[in-house]
Image 1: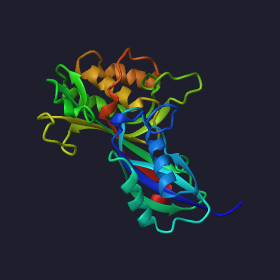
Image 2 (image 1 turned 90 degrees about the vertical axis):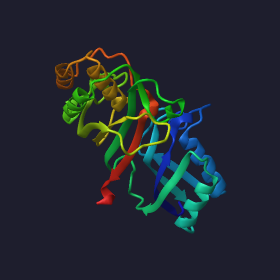
Image 3 (image 1 turned 180 degrees about the vertical axis):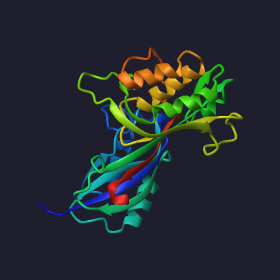
Length: 263
């Protein structure tokens, strides 16, 4: 069957011009750009990619993980491979690290945690340059009650109301290990508004649109359209919330993926 070698790659990308991670016919995706670059950097080599999950269109990542399977000789130099990939990738994708891992490693099965952050602002409309980085919600928001509401998501709950189009067999009972909202001090730019905020969410896995729907519920809470009791009851029973909006994708970032081999 020939030699096989496997590598764990970490990348970061600005998702604003991409239709998500996963390759789709007729769409510009992060996976497709990586595959094109791999064919140029490793001509004639048999390679396969598997991502640690999916990201929605316009969602960005600072620590997305994927495994690279190489059939044939190993990479001659992991350092040179990283340099050549970054030299040829588009400017909104960067390879952060390359690490050889056992063939038994699986980037999905061996994941032990993920962290997302949702950056946002509200009130007066911000500078248009903020669009790739910040979700924007018009009007006032009570951020103090939103901070209290964020803590309600921590623990084992039924997130059916926070999962996009769940079917009968969709797994909606999940564990959130952390969820807190605070003023943003990490992601900054000269054109950012005076204040922006960040919702940080951690867990083993998330359903479709889950973090964006959690953010939308907190916005409804901050506007007085929902109560803390509404959120608590929905998390207990899986019942609907009545929130029809979903938070804009561009405010969401995958900021880290952890694995069992890291410990």
